[in-house]
Image 1 (tube, rainbow, N blue to C red):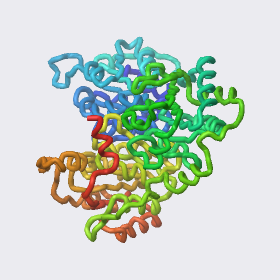
Image 2: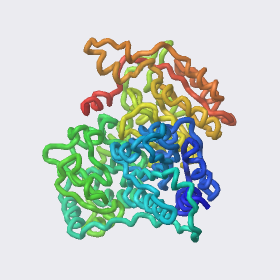
Image 3: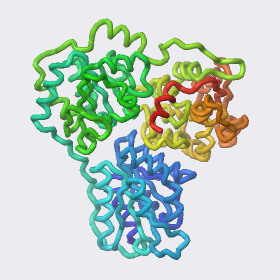
Length: 544
């Protein structure tokens, strides 16, 4: 057995069951070895798409996926997706073949590229140590929640590997226990609070965290919100405010601003989630709970920082609670939440015409038409607030938000990875026209995999964020506007069913597709009005 085969087998045995990539000569034997050992391989049409699929799969499945790429250009093609994963602290293993001879046309300093993105690196150095080095790289990805690049030099891949027993699966990361003094301090803060709000982030998505947080919130009368990446966590709870931050509805923002205590649970409390601090009142006590000590206070000054697992910490605080409190949970607040917390319940002037549909009208209609058991992947752009907040999701596994790097073009690949991680749900990809055309190659992957996906393109014939940011100041916009494109025809070329939507009546074709066999994926080319920027856009550009 060669080193490439030994490493591939060992990684599969250690727990990597899903691999994405584009196969070339340098990663051919490694990838085939993983497939032979039991991993599933999904071939993307571009390494950038493969990287984002692996990222999304990991987020939605809770398991570590791998990305397999060729040396040099295979890795550089993947870098934007890898950067997104690294910024999101996705535990992803990047397997890259490597040439070490600078005269090779494939040579680049792959380690330097990884470090520039905040990616950890490792290397296979010898036949005798290859398996343990591969397991060590996977262990770092899993236990440190980091994206790790494992370089596999071609010369070492071809060496004979010593025979060894099958590798055992790696144990999961152990839960971090909070200090008793921190638990007591948080209990005291909540005892004093009259209007507490819990904001749950990615660290609250593991099993058991929702139940623990809801029980603690019930005891102290706290309202419940999430960051965008944890959207859906409290779906169905009558005290849920949905998403905090730039996507927040007016009522959600109002209630969070009036809180006297905000507790971030596995949440970075960054500029997006806290609207650059505007959602924090001048006298609000801010608490942050995270199992990574370096995250505490990284984006916002906190009055109390607790290093601990979310579920463990919440349960221990609950044990110290002296009695049930009303807190923020009054009859009036309950009525307001039921009537006005969802964006679709906020009145608006429909600006649809006979040729263009208002994206709010489109999104509300799709929310009613599409099955509730769905998983949504969203691209970046002016449009993104509409599918993110008008399309409901059943739980925290129903919304995949690869936006830490704010790159457009990742949305379709995001939805593919999420779909494979949640195969019992209808996958929905929500894209702008710019991102749709940028990632169009992966339409073939959707069709090839037989995914019954709905791809919704909010087509305003432009990079809308730039149009609405620079247009009002009189700047020329020719560089960010495009002529009309028949995106539905493009999709048909890939084997999709497709419909062009200009009015609400055109969505009858979507209803028919949903009622049918769904034997082919569906693309909706929605020609949307371009009279205004999305409500969250002003908040987004504050960060520039």
